[in-house]
Image 1 (tube, rainbow, N blue to C red):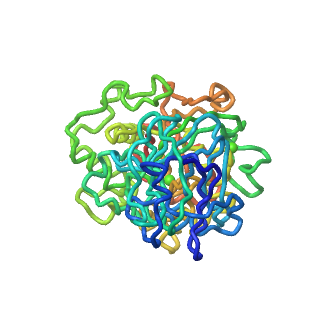
Image 2: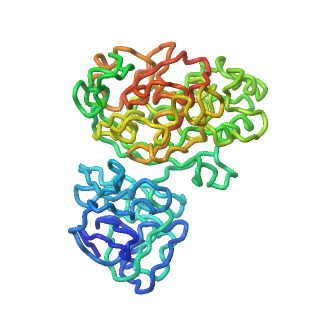
Image 3: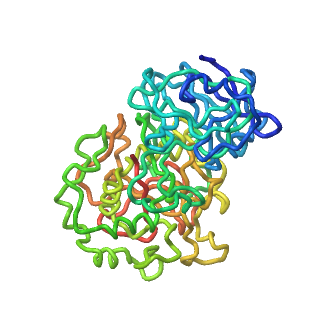
Length: 479
Ligand SMILES: [Ca+2]
Ligand SMILES: [Ca+2]
């Protein structure tokens, strides 16, 4: 049963949620026409619930509140491709807005994969989708968080429609990647009520990397940190990838340290799947701590500002800092991921083709949007209390829901810093990384202690010596 351009409408002032047919939203398309009962809250995996009205005239101009309570995860409903369009909701200038974009040939099929217990989208078309919907709203005609994400072929199938009650609810708006071992044993609620290992699909595309002179990401008069290494702006291709929603926390890093027995990544580990030669080199091994005791001293790079504690304390949800680029690389490998490339990081931070000035848009940074300028504790001067737990500024999330891309810790990425990269090899970048020998690696995103707001722009490039841990610097992994 296929309903192209069918929209789901949750009524009673709750949700105006658009869903476009073309995705597999349940074990069988019939799942969406069975319900006749009353609305009921969705279960933990519930998701793309809703039912009823087929109405392709619905648009989100009227602030579809449905996007926000959708799952409490937040940020948007990740739609599936319908023909050539993918639809979703996201905040634009503070208003939840229905958006669409050309999917090209990607055919993203989003769904709940019961086997992996996660939501994700896969490329490809056709084939039997995996899994069933999550706990959908009981009797309502709503599907669960959907199947369809099965296997390489992705699901296809009908969706939507059906009579029945409204549902939707918790679960499902974020697309989760495969969580790594760093969150084993956690409740999944530690980071602002969410899983610290949440990883969000970033749909690939072409975007204008670097800073323009007059475009949406241009510097304006008075901005003090607008270096020429951000130019020229140039088109860059980035393929689909997952990027962790949060900066890596102390608690996650503790798992890594606790299990550390001197084993380091093998040669080639952590290589970007599309960029050969970017994996671990065993010649780096001597730059790493060799024991837990080594780690404990290594992670205290400063008398005041390290977030690490030798025993669990009140900083478990703080971002780990004082990690070298090599430490970050090794952690991501152990955790089943890798460091994002500079291009991937910027793509996520500027919303891809949106070419945003800041992750949240064009609004000037403020304490409501980002952790910066030692303002977090509300007092003048800088203190440890100006470092925030990860995800503390959800209003400043990026287009795909990533927290703290601007501010809190500045973040290591894969690339070696090359000031002229954008006018040299990086100018024709199709899943590229600057990965020649170099002493300094790129860091992105500004940090909790930086004063000047323009440091938080998505295009800003920083670099630090790769071998040193520094208190402003943390990281997150890609997958
Ligand atoms: Ca740009
Ligand atoms: Ca950050």
